[in-house]
Amino acid sequence: MFYLLALASALITLGADRPAPTPYQLVVPWTNLALILLVPLLAMLGAGLLTRSRLPAEQRRPT
Image (cartoon, rainbow, N blue to C red; front, side, top):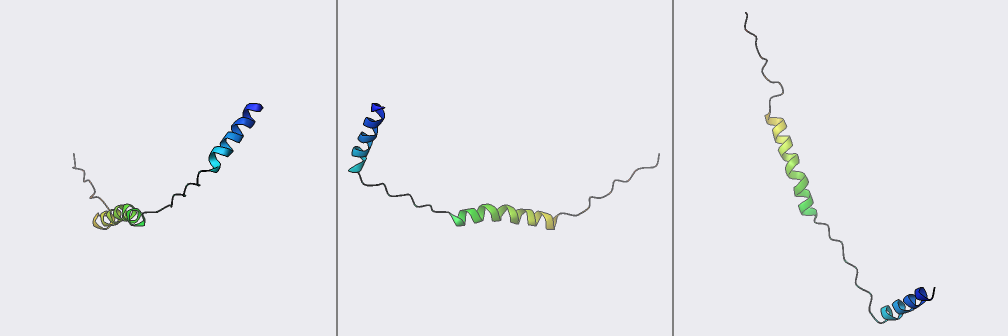
């Protein structure tokens, strides 16, 4: 128990003279996220528009 009290008092006294660290500001790279999402969507849209909906049917030869 004494150990915890000594540790707590040491941490309080050591931390009292230091200024609080400035918090990091969260910056979201909206341009990069938009490009990461937009490029594959445009590729899928282009592939869907330029691909035939049905494959040609395979014809059987009479035997």
